Image (tube, rainbow, N blue to C red; front, side):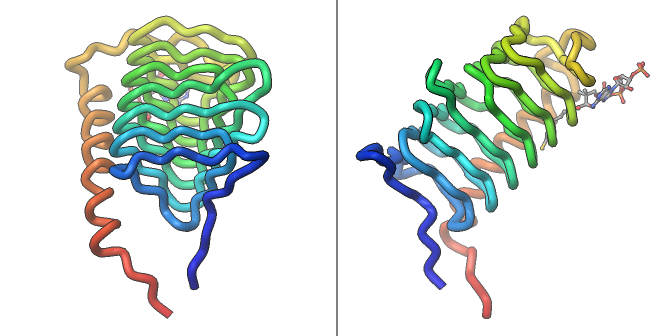
Length: 179
Ligand SMILES: CC(C)(COP(=O)(O)OP(=O)(O)OC[C@H]1O[C@@H](n2cnc3c(N)ncnc32)[C@H](O)[C@@H]1OP(=O)(O)O)[C@@H](O)C(=O)NCCC(=O)NCCS
């Protein structure tokens, strides 16, 4: 079965770097730009029908994550951002090196600063602005603590980033559909 899930809409066609990998069961629609060495896992949805979505180099978008744009702004996701399974992203921006935990919800217009970690299952309310290199957790998400660049939590995120970059070649060469 050949599944095509990258769609042009209203003359706007996703621009996907040749070094990126989008799994055939992910969906990418419309005004979307995907940078170098980005990994997009199965069932992720990146829907640029209302406004543009830009995803920076070496970012990963894990299974079931949803990224949806808004007419009011361009949704900008920076470089080396880790987007965990089932995260829902309606944010205005996620800056470089941020990490979005599994199942986190980033409401419309929220802003995630560089190096921020949003905890698993956190809810970042509309238009919430975060400060760099801090962890936010809970519903609604509140400041939990600072994140040291040498901390175990930061090292774990850096490992995830590298694993997903390595997965690109593995998936390209070794992924086989079986009947
Ligand atoms: C928030 C996080 C970084 C905390 O990690 P940690 O410091 O090792 O966590 P600990 O277990 O030591 O807990 C520290 C405190 O934070 C609280 N906490 C931890 N995770 C939490 C969460 N998801 N939501 C709310 N509170 C949380 C703990 O209850 C604890 O509170 P206490 O001090 O009052 O008891 C981690 O739980 C997390 O969510 N990481 C996200 C990682 C990620 O991006 N994953 C995606 C990978 S695919």
